[in-house]
Image 1 (cartoon, one colour):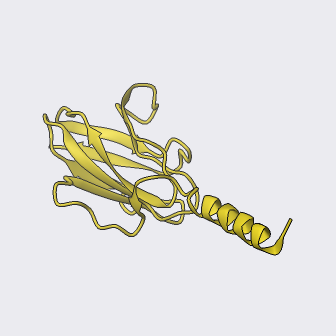
Image 2: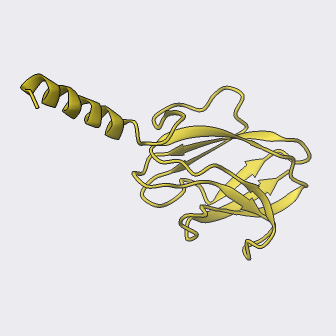
Length: 125
């Protein structure tokens, strides 16, 4: 293989590796103006263990993952995680806005499905 072909091949491989961080906005992105709730994952933890969301209407949840590993936000009826209310896409080193269906007024359990020790409470009210 010629030197120029080797350089092109190396550049293509680096570009492919750089693009493997998951789709969506840059991880450092700020929440969009229409986001009702914002949660960040960093250091294998959520930045908040209690989050307030509107009750009785769908809402937008801005989720920023600053870790080099996959995370999501999933909402369940309770800590048994048996009754899923919403499961967000798993992302790595990126930000995404989830469209969450309406939650009844009350408290709901949320966690990262990849790392179940990352957890908290959604208070819909």
